[in-house]
Structures are given as C-alpha cells and as structure tokens.
Image (cartoon, rainbow, N blue to C red):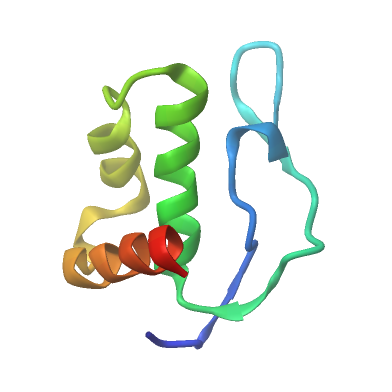
Length: 86
C-alpha cells in the first residue's frame, strides 16, 4: 500500500457534521489521522455507510461521488482483508 496521502484514519458517518439539509459541514475526530493509503478511508466510509444505514445501497453512489476512476479495486480489497484480519 502507498502512504502518500494525508488520511482521516476514522472516516465514518458519526464523524461527519451535516447541515439541516444534509449538506456536508465539517469532519471531526482527527486523532487517527496521518499519512496512509486513501483506500483506508474509502474502506471505512463504505463500511460505515453499510453499518450505520443497514444497507449497501449507497456504496456505488459513494464511490461515484468520490471518483470511481481514482479507486483501485484490488487495493481496496487488500484493505478489506487487512482490516478484517489485521
């Protein structure tokens, strides 16, 4: 994995602050932030959507909004395996 991006380290729905009309306002809780592979934040964003909303219906939308062309699916699978088995 690459460590060339400043990542949040705990990118999840509870760390997003939204305005009343569900527009992004702020991101909080940077105690796990540092240099890493951005696929780590992508993984936790997807996991959090699925876990907190109880559905995987938003995964494709999340990846499309992020910029699917920036996502290396093989690297994302590697992060999934790493996070599952440490």
